[in-house]
Image 1 (cartoon, rainbow, N blue to C red):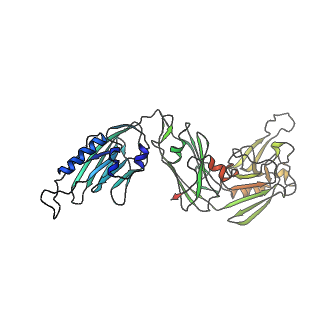
Image 2: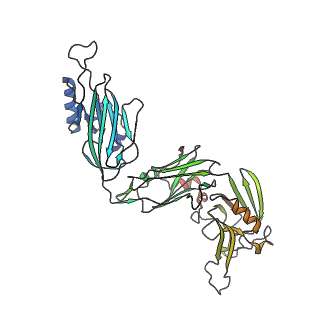
Image 3: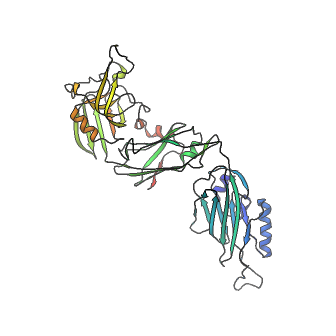
Length: 426
């Protein structure tokens, strides 16, 4: 029923779906009112605030029809879903005023250009009573007021955003062209459609992108291709009152503003043993490197589109799965490190392998560069910069760090509830 109302225009045939408020004095209008009340099963909540006005040139006793108000949901409705659009319409006139008021404030809404329809925007709070007051006016200035009420469904619990990236303290708010928007909720969300359609991405220029669910608590957004350099991005998470499934409703809204920096993309060839750094399409540095020595699977540097995940001046590196005293064990303090995966891969300073950099692969899986190049790289890298490695038999897994770009567009959108969309203007 609610879907039928949402897709409707206000016409006499739809009056049975909503409360109609009118109390005309004319006999014909009174008959219409009784018919409306019988079809809607409601008592009118309207009251006339002006007297009938005789039409110019009309026979004595003929009056212009008073404006009437149509409201959905119907008066005294209970258990209304919080994401229901509140609809108010005017017949034989236009809407002068509409308020949907609850104990914590009023719901925002938008009036149509012709002034005959009003729609709420956003969501209501769960377990809350609202009063809808609407005033319509006919062409002669005669007003009709409608006062109805409804109550929303009660919540069994709430959910909210537990973690949101980019983050000013961890990534900075100017990020690389590969940076995704990453949201983690504090509870499992099963009504993915309702949640996803309330996550609004606005940009300073149109960008085609999509959300992607990794599990019931984790949803990320990325464009189809890398962000355009200099794009301003705003995330508006309108989650207050949004149903999350299982009786959960959103608690609190969030807004995130960040900016895409220059377009810097680093390409590394395991076979040629070099990193090539390009900024806005121009090569700005060529760096000799030494990648993973192989032999064991874990000692291969992964191929694929990595993203700079962190910049750490000092990192303690240890041998994975090998303890002290065992063959192959190491524990080393490493400087000027840029993390590119969750399996222990970094671009970092390696003075011990300078002799092999540019000619041989001798590392345990990291990308070794000289101290001078490592200092330059960490100073000139933004979190979210793409670092694309080729030539390894081992591919970067999408869930190994920020492997978002390891999925093609079809794979990425497969796990979106609303599929791809063009961002709204910021």
